[in-house]
Length: 476
Ligand code: NAD
Ligand code: UGA
Image (cartoon, rainbow, N blue to C red; front, side):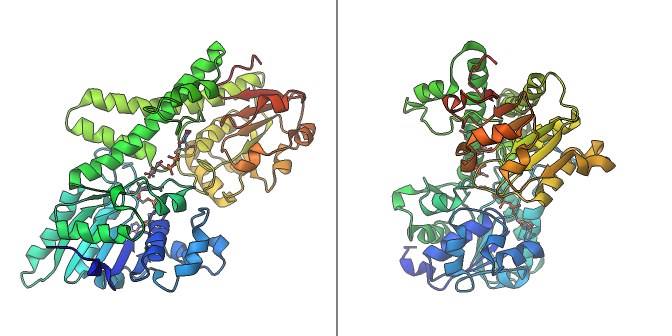
C-alpha cells in the first residue's frame, strides 16, 4: 500500500515508561509533530508527578534543553499520567520504553535481560488495546524479542475468536546519550526502523520524517534492528575500554594519553570521538547490553565471542579498582580517617543519572578503606547518593554508614581539610576551578586525582599540591 503524509493525522500515541528515554524522546516527537497526541504513562506515580511539576527544575530527568521544550508541548499535545489502561485503549501506536535491566536471579542471572517489565506491558496491551495497534520496541532488547511479543499477543487473541484486535511489531531502538539527549533526538546520526510490515514501518518513518532527513532513516528487518542496538553499545564501550587500556600503558612509559588519542583519532577510520580516558564507563546501558550480548553468544554456544565482549567489562571493572588502589597507595597506603573530596557522582557530565556510575564503586572502595568522603555533584541529590552507596555497600553497611560520607553543596565546603580531591565526573565547572584558593583549604600534603583528564598540569605547576592525571606520566 502506498504511503502518504496523512498517515499521521490526529494519531494517538501512547508511550509506556516515562524514564530517561520515554520522557525526552516523546517530548521531541510531540514538539516536532503537533498533529500527534502523546500520552506517556508509567506505574511510578512519583515520577509522573515530577513530569507534571509546575516547577521545571523538578523534572525527573535533567537534560540540557529539555525543560524549554516541555514548556511548549506539555498539556497541549504531550501528557504524562498513570492511566496505562486508558492510554493503551485509545492509542494507534504504542512505544515500549520500559526498563530492561540485567536479571539478578534465576536462569541467566547476571547476564540475561530481565524482560518482566516489557512482558507486563505487552500483556496489558493484549488486554486493553482496540482495533489495529502498532507496537514499537524502543527499549533495548535481546534479538528475537519481537517474536516473544508476538507470541504473547497471539496467545490472548486465540482465547477470544470474536476479537478484532490486530498488531504490527516494529523495532525502533533509541540511540540518545544522556546529557546530550535533546541534541541527539533533534539531529540523530540515524533513526533505525526494523519490521516486516511495510505499512507500519512507513507510519513510524512518517513521524521521524517531520524533522530527520530521509537519508538518515534506515529501514531494516526486525532482527537486524534489535541486534544493531546491542552491537552499537558494545562497540562504543569497547572503544572506552581500549583507550583506558592504552592510558595505563601511557602512565608506565611516559607517553601522554591525550597525544596518543589525538594521533590515533586522526585516522578517520578510528575517529576522535569516544577516546577520552576515564574512570571506566558507567550508565545504565553499556554493561547491561554487553552482558545481554554475552548471554546471546553463550546461548548460541559462541563462547569465544562471549569471552571477547566480556573482557570489555572486565577491563572496565579493573580500571575502577586500579584507580581506588592508586589513591590509597599515593596517600601513604592508608586512608583511614582521611577526608577525601569526591567531585562528581553522576556517570557523566550533564546528567543527574548515577546508574553504574564509576563514582559508586570507587567511593565504596574508599569508604571500605576507612576514608570519610565529602561528595559534591551539581545535579545529583543526596537521596540518590545514599541509595547507590547503601546498595553497593549492602553487606558492609552498619549504623555508622551515614557518618562515612556527606553531600556538600559547594566545591569549597567539600575540600576543607581534605587530603585529596578525586575528580570522577567531567562537569564543566571542575575544569574552570581556580585551584589556588582551594589548595589552601586542604590538609598537606594534598593530592588531586583527575580521573577524567580535564586538568592542565601546566596551570597547576606552581601550586603546593601533588597531581595524578589519568593516562599521564607525572613522576609523582
Ligand atoms: P528508566 O528506568 O529510566 O525508565 C523506565 C520506566 O518504565 C520507569 O519509570 C518504570 O517505572 C517504567 N515501567 C516499568 N514497567 C512499567 C509498566 N508495566 N507500565 C508502565 N511503566 C512501566 O529506563 P530508561 O533509561 O528510560 O531506559 C528504558 C529503555 O531504553 C531500556 O531498555 C534502556 O536500555 C533503553 N535505552 C536507554 C537509554 C538511556 O540513555 N537511558 C538510551 C537508549 C536506550
Ligand atoms: C550510551 C550510548 O552512547 C548511546 O548511544 C546509547 O543510546 C545509550 O548508551 C544507551 O543505550 O543507553 P550514555 O550511556 O548515555 O549513552 O552515555 P555515553 O556518552 O555513551 O557514556 C557512557 C559512559 O562512557 C560514561 O560513563 C562516559 O563517561 C564514558 N565515556 C564515554 C568515557 O569514559 N570516555 C569517552 O570517550 C566516552
